Length: 501
Image (cartoon, rainbow, N blue to C red; front, top):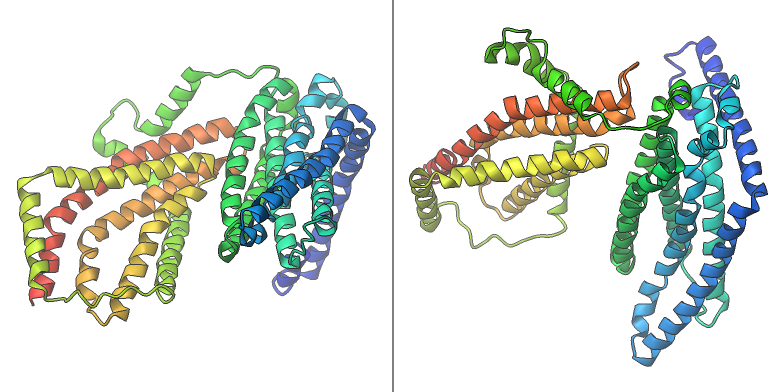
């Protein structure tokens, strides 16, 4: 943060920079007051710390015993070469184990104090919501990280001084430690958000499954990558994504944290009538009693599309990056395309048969529409659970493949014009649809991280859902239908014309 302020120094007066730095230091100082209090109380509670650290000490010893058994098994069966790839797996699992157990501390940060009737005195302190939330979050992070580091240290030392005499590379150890750290931060920050938005520890523990299960699946993916040394560089990208998730969770938690609501809310309930009414009102828009299709588009749909300008720019940047990445990747994986020729009569015949089949069989148009609609629908659903990240990834993939393909065509000495024209006719309609749908999905997934001022998170999300539905039905779906018609009826004719002239 200090570096950011330094870079802003030429544009900000000195009188504004110094108070800004002082405010940041004061915020962190006040937050650490809460952190010291929480950590001291946690360390004093032997009913929490004793099981955690006993398991932290016992599990690495058990893991060392299992590693010796697997080592003997591989050596007996002549699979010694697999050991360097398999040994890094256990430190990551050993570090993850105490974090998953220590998650109970994070889950009780707010709701636990509410049940113990100690929350109201804490919230009555002259601390801001941000200071209070950051202090509780820091306190919830420290014990899990201490337990995780302790477990990994015991296990790695057991391998270094044991029969295996394992001498891992310092970069590999740093990678394992950093990966475990960001995973712990994701779980803890997510648990603190859950604790601040629930009314009982029972509800918090149930909702914790939405944290444990995705992270456990991520650990499985990391394990697959870990046993392939030539692909371990992918773990750095996973760390970067997890770090961004931590920042989003902290930002979201600090923004939606409201001490008055936390004290006043005593029961969580699902109000389906309110949810449906809010979504429908946003879907319908301010059209009044005189509902017409044109009024709906003019007063509701078009303003909603206009509000997606920032998201559309973000999606466009991701598409350009994906295309450039595919083009660059083509330099490392060259595919021979010498067997293809731009004036190949067989290719022209295939295009003509495709056009005739599309004329006689409208199902091809329906298949094209269904495929594009299914991809955008899945991207929207995944955006809800990933702050919009997976929506961007799904939108980027086809353009990465397109960049890779065009780079291969160019490198093979073929004319890229026929391949380019195989995309342009329907792409002029399809790409704007993808931009709009991607921006709407991104907003739907990320609205919880920054809801409008004075609007509860649930209401903001329901309004975003209403906007997404009306944009999808009113704009994206018609564009996808038109693109499907052009893809089957026009694009083959354009490519045939380019090949024959």
